[in-house]
Image (tube, rainbow, N blue to C red):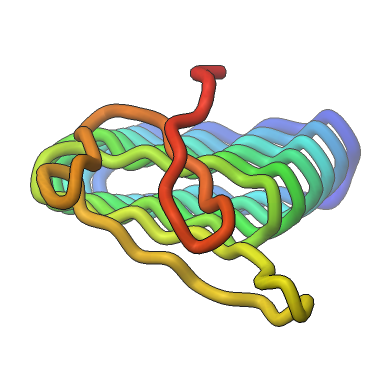
Length: 148
């Protein structure tokens, strides 16, 4: 579906929801499900074990809840949240935020002084990074970010 302000929702295992357009929402409930949005301010949310949420566009939001679930967002000012154990939260856009649970991984991009894009990887429980806490990449280091 490609319409601004559109929404798709599914509620079975192995389901997929994909939508594009500004302010669009894709939501799935069920194990091994996927939600994907493309467009400014889009929200992709999925709930279930080993599920994946992906959002692309300015100020987009990807949330995956469930163990071994992954959230990925691309675009300036995005937010990626992986709730549950062993999840990955990845933000591939400047000024973005990431948050992951126990045994998870956080990934974000930043620019060095020469303007080159860099990737920062962190692990909750290591080097002072706390689980279930928002972070952003600043000058090659993790900095706690304000909650939403």
